[in-house]
Length: 161
Image (spheres, rainbow, N blue to C red):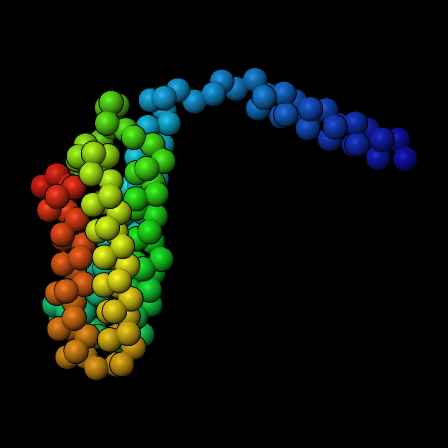
């Protein structure tokens, strides 16, 4: 019984300590928020690239063609793409020193940026339907249009690398 009481008291004390320590932490600085926003955006782009890379490898013949994987990856891209403008709209990082390939013009031309993300969703959905058919030639032929939806945004809103 005494052990249960001591255990409960210890748990309560630890909880109070953690809560107090967390409450006393300072709010993030604008620079920290900008860095975090940039990291989040880059994480989404890495996921997009990962999924598109597999599709591109199939089209180049450096990976075995698998219609189900091509469809799945296109669907993933269609789900991720709407996050792109949301993440940029959530925090304008132009005035901060952050490592990014995103051009500052994004925030000046947000409507066009949103449109390009919408076009990527449409291209991904169209590609997914073609891939679902299982027709390798049609799927490989459709990669160019799908990839073009990515490239169109890069041409305007991303630094050359």
